[in-house]
Length: 205
Image (cartoon, rainbow, N blue to C red; front, side, top):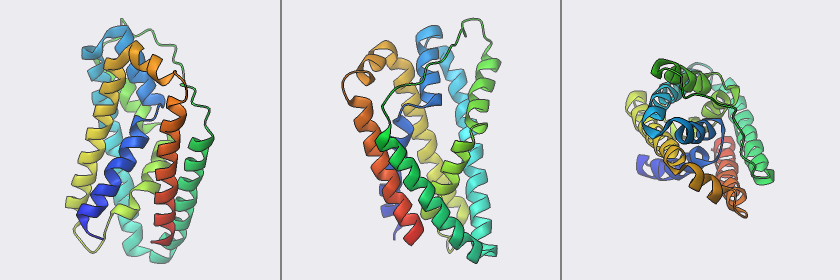
């Protein structure tokens, strides 16, 4: 499969997963409403650095596994595919309720905001498991790893930033939109369907 097709599949998959309400997005929205978008950018910087670190570590670990332990990697492919399928099913079954954060960040320093975003990104075991499960189908060890990683990382950083900006700048309006009717439910179902599809691709590819 060509790189263009891989990118065309990865971009919408990661976008819908990224835009789905979660801890980082709820944090961005809460800070955006309480301290403004400009100061929330400091949290976003920390979060993006953390996500990049997780993604690089996941890709390098998976690539090493593929080269040195192909038999073990075959097992991990099925485990990863099953995990993504499980996440997809959970998204389908989600009630669409957004998490709430008790955040009083008006007096927090910019460095503290960056640290908060960084820790939120790297301290979540589900984030690690997700990256390790999602990225392997889009890495070809027959080609140089660095250019592929750069492309995927660029997509991840852009989609994460756009999603956090949408939540931070949308504020109350976005919260009302997501809380209206079945909007979150359908967003979860789209992301869940993509996760199930990628899970099958990972396990059988």
